[in-house]
Image (cartoon, rainbow, N blue to C red; front, side):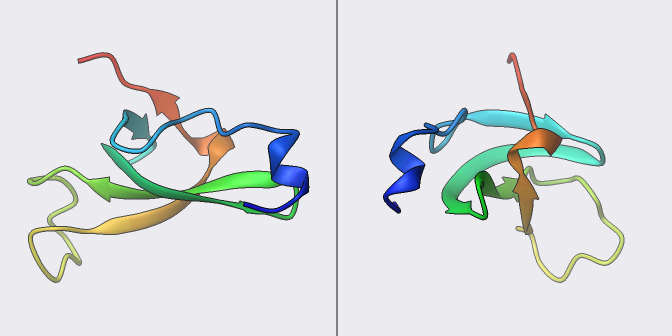
Length: 71
């Protein structure tokens, strides 16, 4: 966490379910980069079958692309 990141807390927590254009998943980690939070999201099994190398796929997304998911 950088000095400036303390001023802007992350909107999402680790293991929180989120959705985004193209899928849904869980937050695995976050990083404060260039004034915004970016999140590593592990997609749920069974989504985005095309182009997938294994059972799990993680994507890096900015906070603005995510929405909380209500299960």
